[in-house]
Length: 198
Image (cartoon, rainbow, N blue to C red):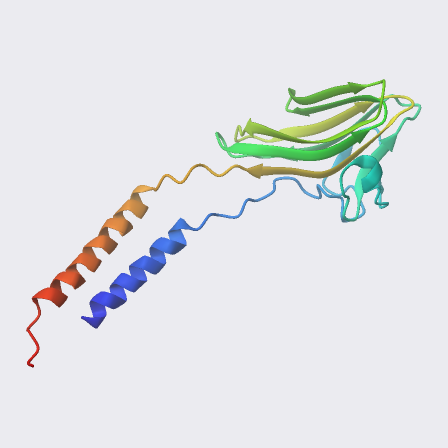
């Protein structure tokens, strides 16, 4: 009878491990710019820079250590991009903080517009969370900014998988049924065992 209980405990433990959610893996390298560099990013016009000051009261979001910024220069367009390879059909969440004093911010993923804002009249800030589907091939996440006089700040850029609702796989169903069968068998043996003497 101890073996039956041992198998039941092992199956219950295995079922609990199978049911644990997988930690979301961020597809973006150095999205918080904590390295102090633009490592992982290509800077098309070489005018983005990493800034370490915390201006959370001004920008509306807390920058733990660093953020990437660009100010208006003689080149009216700045572009910060990174190549990602999302899984085909997988849902992802593109998430980033932004602050713009003046100008236009256009965020695209392989020429699909995810976010587009013109802010020529007043400073604006926000956090965007956009759901996209992966294609299974490398895609370029691009943050393009255009302005001669304004500035933009980006931070906490992430692209993480969205977990699907908990629909058990066939192996999970099989483990669950086997576990119920073993527990039921153990209970049946306990009831039909020899009666103890008084």
